[in-house]
Length: 227
Image (cartoon, rainbow, N blue to C red):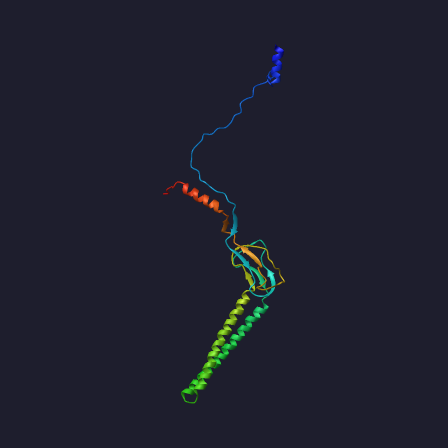
């Protein structure tokens, strides 16, 4: 009978603990009390930091590039020199415009004298109206020549100023696309780029589904009064 019971226990997988083996101890676990409190719904997005100001530096006049005055990747201040273009031809253009202005002013002095002389002769009946009109037209032409010469002088001075390419903003300057000794023109393209550092924009795309979800969450939130 004992043999039959032993065979039955072995067949059905029953086993008795070995002699002297201790029972497993209880494993401690942490517990917390459930608490009901308000939460703030939130959504997560991947943003991108972008500069508020971004300026592409280009040449305004044509000439040989004499120097690059910045370090690539460095920070430059507003008004700092970036490039220097050969100035000789532009300085000569300024002097030529100054000479033309002086000649125009001298011509104006002569036409004024001639007009005064013709008007005096006309008052004494020694001159003619035709001569007076011709002198008046010449004087007015001289005035126009002075205005034209002054405009040419300002233009040549502005072009001379363009030989010093300066930074219009403060920020980090990028890599230069052209080096010393090359010819630059207004058609050369972007010489370098400057981006502002402070403050900055943080932009992130929001899908229409997420936007609508945020609107629904906003409508479900309870209204609170602030003192």
